[in-house]
Each structure stands twice: as C-alpha cells, then as structure tokens.
Image (tube, rainbow, N blue to C red; front, side):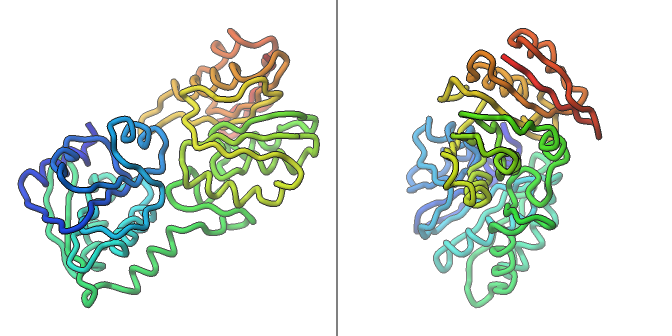
Length: 338
C-alpha cells in the first residue's frame, strides 16, 4: 500500500476529523483510509488515468478539475512540489469557512517543507508522523489566510510557458518545464515522409506531435494518447494551430491497456520507464506491444529509449525491419517496420 495512504489511515484512526460538508480528495489513491470516510459524500480528484480507473471501478466519483465546495479536503503530495502547493491552494479555495485541510506527504517528497508552507498559508497546523510520512492539518479561517501565498500557488500550478519555447505546460506533467532530451533527440530523426493515420503514445504536452506536424503536411489524422489529463490539456493548446490541417484526436488513456485504434501508418513515442523512483522496463515493453499491434503491415514505429533498456529482442519478434538511427546522451532512437 502507498505509505502516504497508510499514514493517513492511521491519522484518521487516531484523530477525529469532522466535516459538515462534502469530502474532496486531491490526487486520490486507493487505501484503507477511504473506509474511514464512509457516510460522507466523497469526490476524488485524480488526473492519472490508471489511478482514476481503479477508483471508478470501486464506485468512487472521480473528476479531473473539481469546483464544488467542501467541508473536508485531503491532499496527497506528489513529486512535483509546485503541484502539491497548487492542490493545497485549490483545496483551501474550495473549503467552506471552518473547513479542514489534511495533507499527507512522504518525507522524501519534502514533507517538512510542505508542512511549514501549509502552516504559513493557514496560520498554523498540527502534525502526525507515521510510515516515513507526515500528515498535517489545519482549519480555514479567512482572516488568518496567507492571501499572497494562496494567489501565488494557484498561479504557479496553472498552464504556463515553457522557458525558451512557445509551448505551455504545468506542474504534474512529465518534464513539465523543459523539453525532455530523449524527445528532443527523437524529434531530430523523425522522417519528413510520414503520411496517413498516426499516433503519439505517451504524448505528454504534445512536443513530438508538434514537431512531427511541423515537418510534414501529409498526415491526415493524428491520435494523441496520454494517461495524465493535465498533459493532454496542455497538448490541446500546443497543437491548436494545426487543427485546421489535420484531424487531431486526444485520448485520456492508459496505453498499457492496449489501443482502441488500429491500422495505423505510423507511431512515435517516448515511452515511460518508471512510475516512481524504480525503473520498470515492462512499461516501455507494454507501449511497444501496443504500438506494434496497432500498426498495419509495413507501418513504422519511431521510439526513443534509454540506451540500456532491453527493447530490441521484443521488437524483433514483431518487426520485419529494425535499426538504430542514433545513440547520444544515454538515449537511442530506433526505427521499426512491422
């Protein structure tokens, strides 16, 4: 079980947290803590598709961007400090007067710093430690709120320009404030003769799709698949200028579950290879299987990966043709023909 969820469960077991309104949970995840909230009207905010699907499967109501008032708001910290502060600020904005904010943060996600910032925002918090995490909570009293902090954190979590580009992104998205070097390398080796129907798997905020469409005018239809809703929101903005010349389809979708489209002429991707801090080569392998299953015979796959990841053997079980186009900076770019 997620240690933050376990710490929150223990906190709720030992501390009574009353709520006169609905309960809202930012970056909600599965855990025993949920049963302690039985009897309350509950809304889960989750923008990562696998986590959202897991909650929906158990009957919870899930939204990407809540706007309903609540009496109790729970925030789970993420690896993006700016995103966590944004969720704390959104939570306080939605809390009714006298409502309670509870934050669960792992120590290695900066729990002590987040606790201090939360105390500055609310005018004080009480804290609890368990499972190498901290759970801290406070009450919304408008007269004590750090209004400047609130405004600053809200602004910092919204869509904003990526420095040195005309693209936008936001905290919570992979490589949110820079161009990922692997994607940049792949973009250099994308051919200019791609045509027909294609897909970008794990599309992020749309960088590869944008570079592809800027290079060729022969693409008729492009599907972007992305598990993080916040990234897909940015991709819509970043590709708006191309919408008149190509059919664009944006899918909030877990690629590892397979694709709902087939007979594609080409696929491009920079697949993920970890969910937390540990490498998971199986993620990239699942992306490759999904890509090759969706391509029509003769279709092409262009993929960038860390040089050490063992994708070649898998590729050769499907491919008519496979070659490495480039190796640089610890990455490799592969071209695969089904």
